Image (cartoon, rainbow over all chains, first blue to last red; front, side):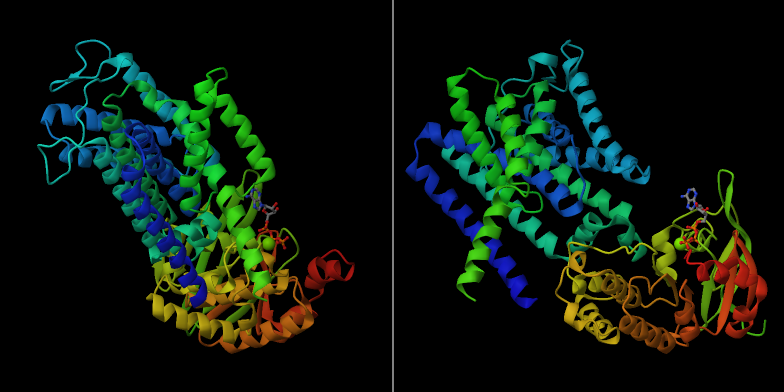
Length: 334
Length: 243
Ligand SMILES: Nc1ncnc2c1ncn2[C@@H]1O[C@H](COP(=O)(O)OP(=O)(O)OP(=O)(O)O)[C@@H](O)[C@H]1O
Ligand SMILES: [Mg+2]
């Protein structure tokens, strides 16, 4: 037991060290274009953590993580354009996504929606958001000084600044490091959360909801909290995406993003945090390479890859690799 | 009715469309009592338990536990008042070790450290320490039943509902279970649903017979076993190999 726990923390420590190494060395070792490309992976890794957490450690399968991603992006865009700074807007983006998740979660969990309907509702709500935003092209759709722009999107979103240097736009390498620090921070916080009493109960809900209730835990409240945390993380990723692109359009809410998020988690491995981040990196890199050839639709390729992964490595890349290594390790040490 | 009942139902009724699974049941157990609830398949035993724990909302009637009306309370609220249940189909956290299964129950009332201690006590009480680190999904049915019992007890309930706890157990495990149940009675109330008459003889003092959703008869072991009509509706059926 004790050994199992310390082994677990060892894994998280190892991931953190790798993360810090990436944070410090990538800007030194790679050129500007590559750093920009990797910044994108970092943002998407944070996005994937939002689903990896709620699905892997709370058993909530959401088909609409893009909803929170999009809300975070739009909330950041609108508030940063209005406020002329980025730190408070970043917090606003997180809060907006979290509040939306809480409201939606309340409706779903307290309305005793079954898991299948939960999937459908998250999907449909995201579609509705996409539709709504698409219809805001007219000049009457303006919040303060920010026009929503409908299908044209919102251009000229401010580049994020460090909270303690509000007058200085971040250079690409600094943005990479700042985002990487956020990613590592969220990863570590989630790991601590998962090992806490709250996290253990969340895992028990994943394992058996009925039993968790029969032990005296308020399952609905826990699921609401888990879902809200996932929404907040998705919102943070959305804000980072918006500032990284300096642009958002309604496609941030698209099914494609929700589907990709699912694919990354499944490919990397449900039930781990590290695996899905690897999944993002592997599949996005692959899709980037394929995208340069530009002759087939990326999403189709992703779908095919997913089918192969599900058939060949049903646990996902990282858990399969981990099991393989521990097996051989144990055999050698028997 | 000298001692006040810990649990009392009156007119408790549960309908599923046209089926009346539980039909105006008046039932009471005293603190520290061990009661067996028997009846043929479909008699309504499991449904009765589900009405007590809030897993089902009774169509009519009331449930009073420790002087509080449970009507309208949710499952987790009822459990927190002190009712623990081992369901007919084992409800466990299959992907987690037995130890964590039990600890999660103790954690409801206690700190991390204290819940580890309670977990150790329960593992010893039920004599399943050897299973502590095995994932319960990989255990035999009888072993799972024991883990679930330990889990329920770790919540320190005042009333324990056990729905066919001996099913799938070896003779040795049954003996162990009977001993544990006899020991627990007195400290807490237990209602045990069982089909195995030998097992009931081993543990029971008082028996309630449920038939077609109604309380058919209540009495002590000897009385019930000797009752001709009970033998016809229940024991006779079992003797014919139906149970
Ligand atoms: N959710 C449900 N919907 C409809 N009918 C139900 C439901 N649950 C139970 N019943 C019916 O209620 C009756 C009582 O079922 P119950 O499971 O309570 O019996 P039981 O005494 O536990 O039987 P067994 O000994 O087989 O476990 C049965 O006729 C059953 O078909
Ligand atoms: Mg039953």
